Length: 483
Image 1 (tube, rainbow, N blue to C red):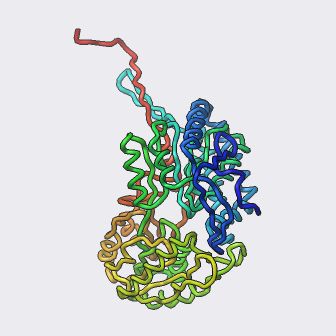
Image 2: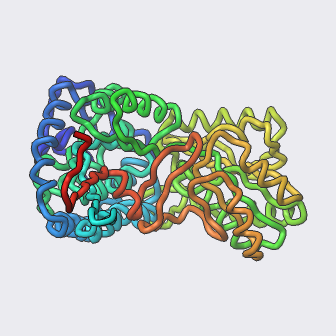
């Protein structure tokens, strides 16, 4: 397939180019080859995107929700029809195996458009009685919103941010990661084909400076970011300076607890999903795996056997289930973490080898004898590195699980459901799983606490984050005054 896009940006319903912008090379992680080039947005491109978004938003907000929802659902249908070609492009963009992208990327984006398209006609307010008088609230769209995406799920993130924004009457200018710039352009193209008015969903390319230009513009009412904690702090500070609303979905160092009574085969499957899906490049991953001492050895034996069956190979081969890392920089970070972990006393059970040849390849690594104070147990690796820690007491593991600045996710495996609910209620994390991990259906809010973010993606709650409340008091009787 052709990976070079028609042009670098998609603005006001069409592809737009400005070759004055710096070149961004798009690299296929499996081979290290350059598969496309795009140009970073110039100030003129940013201005064009914001101007068209502001113009289109006013008319879109005046349209009834049913009509808005119909267009979003049509876009969802088109994405599902083209799932294979979009998934292949996602694999080229990220390096993730086609086996994975066919199931989790464009399909998840389509589900977001379908879900919020269905809710677009139902954005409820409230009514309140005050004697003979009364008041009511309505939810109004914020206006022009900016979405800033991460490089691990470019199609999904574009849709997760655009769908609730558009459903509630906003426009969005979306900046994908400079590492994975291709997929959002296809989303924008499909939106127009589905009938979305031009200007409502614009895509501009660029690095941090472009994101800063978008965030700092006075016409922007809301910023929704998926990214690292350091990036989130910068964007949040910029937005706060102008009192803009934000949603921040940031990083994590999430705990994954395996109690002695857990079904170990399920727990091993959960731990694999929580550490090695997308080659470990998932913000919510449960990378601190606390295993009860009574079952730790059996858990490690089962885990080692399963991890070593991973099929590493051509990501475009649907038999492959473990692909390369997305960038050389992230591979280098992962290798440094492994080196530091060994130096600090961690034991490598399996994996952690960089593979020869082109591309950004490393085998999935399992570390044992990890302690809470080790660097690998404190910092987000964002790579395929699982740290296994031992525990004995429930209270102790809860305290240790919460001993982190992050609070994105947490998970636990036990057959004692009383314990499960008791423990999960004490975990300081925005999204938790019991006897499962990393499933994020659209009807469930997703997001973090502490340094892992603010606000929520998905579910009806996300629509609240793209609207503001207007309160109206209605006087039904005579008006009294002091004089």
